[in-house]
Each structure stands twice: as structure tokens, then as C-alpha cells.
Length: 335
Image (cartoon, rainbow, N blue to C red):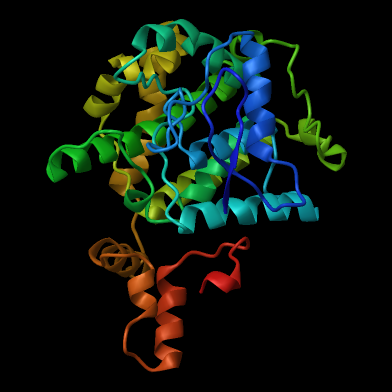
């Protein structure tokens, strides 16, 4: 699944994900583009042993970044898009980890000065390239899984401390998505003018069949956001607290998004309370949803433990269907 590919004279060799021996290396493409856009001879990688690049991204982080910047929407009907999202599913179920949100400031213990120097270039590159609908759809995609298995922290410490950090990472990841949607929907002119009109990928350049990505309008964003809120509610692992949200927006980790909010924080908190907090407090779960979340959160390895229960095949299959969410990109060879 991985392949060691030279990252260039200024970088360290590291594992890179390849779709197959006959397909171009997708991460190599976007890594090269990032390097060229920065015009800096700084390695995007540290070592192959820790699995993190210079910006704290895991391989799964990088692949999500690739889909986001290339604006590859999962609802496209072509085979290439299907294969790309099936590969994302494969990365997730084969224990891929998310270490940070797209714009999170996550400096390493060493080379912090170098990281600080290039972080804004890195974050601005992503800010200029992403599509809001694709961002929301990636959020919906990840919410199909048990999130506590998918997030990681680049720290070795007590289990309780790490668990708290992972919960904070999860909340910060989806908070960032909500902030971006808020800016796009409630301050659209500001949002548009804060981005460069000269995108490196004005449309999915590698995939001409997907070049109509700009057909998504503000109404489509609203529809996708409702879908995102529903997925957030059904997943059941994320609980937002207003005091925690205010604290996160003041931390260094979310400084990029905090600056984008500028003097809009009070209005954003009001938006958040109307759309997120209200749903958390007033939405009634179905009995099926309550049972599914409860069982999902109390088994050790979800969903593998369910597949190994000594039940009759028909009951086992029904229980699997009950606990897992529909995902059209699931590949049966893994089951």
C-alpha cells in the first residue's frame, strides 16, 4: 500500500501512498505543487519513522488535503472519483489517522522557527484552493466512522491526557468546518475577497470531466450543510460546548481561522448556538440511533468486534448493518 519514493534533493525519503504501480502518485503531485508554490527549499517531511510531514500531516491528512484542494466532490458519477473515495475509505479502515484539521497550527518540537515562517504560505495555499461543498462532504464522509479511532496526537503521555487531546482534536476539526461554512454563507463577499482569484487548481485540472465544479451555488452549500449537521448528530461522538468553542478559537492551534473571523466572533457564536447548540439540546434521537451510538461507543474495536461475535450468520449480518452507516465506497474485500 505504501511505496518509498524520493521527495527530492532537499527532502527525506518517506512512505508515499500509491494507488497502484500503474497510476500516478497522487500525493507526490500535490507535494510537488506545494513545494513549488512556496518557492522554498524546505523539506515537507521529517522522517519516515514518525509518519508526519513538516506540517504535522499524516498520510491520511495529506490525502484529504489532496481531495480538498483538487475539489474532488464525492457525488460525481465518474469511475475515477469513485476510485479516489474508495481509496479514502481504505485508508480510514486500515487504521489511517487524522492528526490535525486543515488549517491547524501544529509546530513540531524542533524546527519551530522554520515552521512558523512558512505556515502562513501553507495555510493560504489551502485557503485559496478549497471548495466549501467538498469540505462539507469530506466532513460527512468522516462522520460515518467511529472518530475516536481515527484521530491521533503526536504526543506520548498518559492515556487520560491523550484521550482529552484527541477529543479536543475532534471538536476542533469539525468546528473549523463550521466556521468556514459560516464565513461563506453569512459573509460571502468577505469570504470571496479573502481568497486569490488565481487558483493553482481553478477546477479539478487533472480530471476534465469534473470541470463543472463551479455549478455548486450558495443553495447547494446550505443543503450540504444540513446534511453535515445531520451526520454530526447521527454520529453521536461530538458534543460542542460554547465555552470550549470560545477557548479553542483563542488558542494558537486555530489562529488562522481566528484571524479570518476577525470582528465576526459574536455573530458566529450566535450562529453556532442557533444551529448547533440548539440541535444538541432539543433534537430527539430515535431508539435505534441511541442503541447504535451506545453499542458503538462501548465495543473495543469498531466494527471488527461485531464481525467476530458468535451469533447466527443472519443475526450477525443484521447487527453489522445496524451499527455501521451506509457507505457506497466500501470495498467488500476488506470484510
